[in-house]
Amino acid sequence: MKKNQIILIIVGVLILVGLVFYFNYWLKQIQPKTGTSVPTEEKTEISQEEAIEIAQEKHPGEVYKVKEEEMVVSKEFHYPIWVISIETEENIIEVSINKKTGEIAFENTYPSGGEKGIFLKPEYEGGEKLQ
Image (cartoon, rainbow, N blue to C red; front, side, top):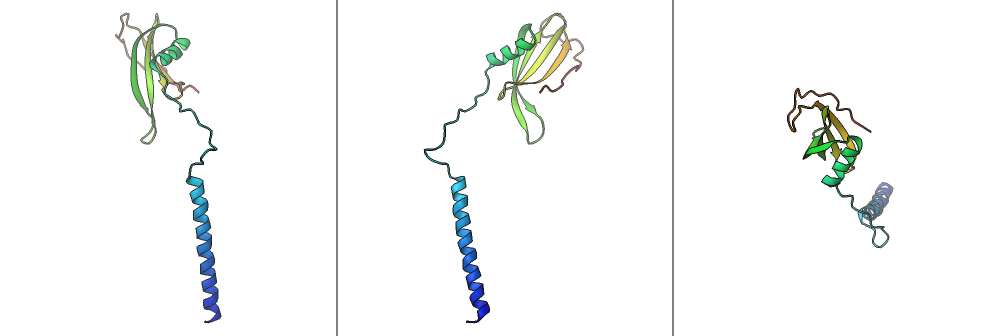
């Protein structure tokens, strides 16, 4: 055999050994570690009652409507929310709460029509995202 062929065979064997080691390393990375992992608590969604409490802390008033909806931010990103409608003396406030984090996503304020569920001029006044 020529010197070039021997060098090519050695390089090929080294590449194959490197690929085997890399594949073994990759398998160890994706396998769950047994016995050493600490069990993590599954974060559950907040309940309707918890969402009402969060909304009433910020806006005291009478809750008359609760809806379960989905907030669509983009085609790829959306998340479930609770929409709590609270009636105060002068306004109806819709508070949207993220079901997974419990944070207030946004609020809308409408003028109150005097009777529950009647909106006069449903103008959008707020809607700023709270951090």
